[in-house]
View 1 (cartoon, rainbow, N blue to C red):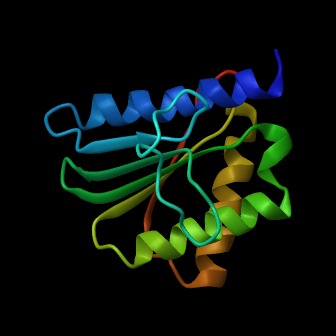
View 2: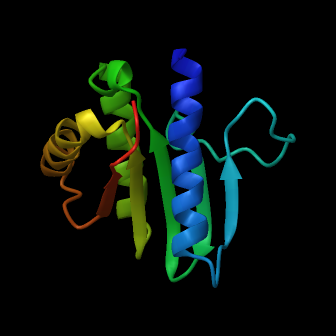
Length: 135
């Protein structure tokens, strides 16, 4: 399975989580993918476009969703993205950073997010790392 298919499966997991968790009030869900109509792409956060952006869903002001494959997770670009998303969430009360990774890098993703929260002083941002996703 190619890297792009693995990434697409992780993005699908984020969208499924949002739909299941926020089924009563799904808000506005914007997804960054090749087949998205112009104008429905997530907004830029810093110089990065998240994979999924949800506004006003089930009590959350903002949900920023990012999918990371095992190969992509520890790259400096990914760390900078996640730090930018944490900063964005910190500026919006009742926000969530939702990260989907393959099950075997769940611990590494949680450790990285914890480290980034400490270094960016965004420890109050709620984060969820989706696990149980095949790699």
